[in-house]
Length: 161
Image (cartoon, rainbow, N blue to C red; front, side, top):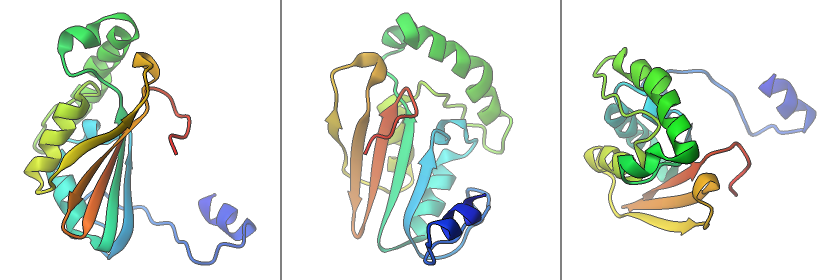
């Protein structure tokens, strides 16, 4: 389906591959993780692998569900529903895999920061955020020698760029 869409658009400089989060090889300009890192059993290992596969000016883009920094804030309103979904789907998914970190969708910026710090990235900074608590879209950037990590947080699937 992706190949057909690319061909229909006349795009000859793209290709589509299916690999595990730690098996792809190459020198990539952009590695993307969309709403999945919190489900991974070994997010640090996955972040380390991504870093090792970046080209000279490559970037990692990470988009994760929004979560507040404290559990109390995540239990109220819509956050409570997301916390429940995460408890019954995301966390068990992670725990069933090798390493089994069990972050869940409510890890938020502190949890993602810890993962990427452990993986050797640095200077994790929030660069933008809007004022709507339950529809927050933000991008955070990590700069590391020649590479950077873009971190987006969202509650819906609307484009953030």
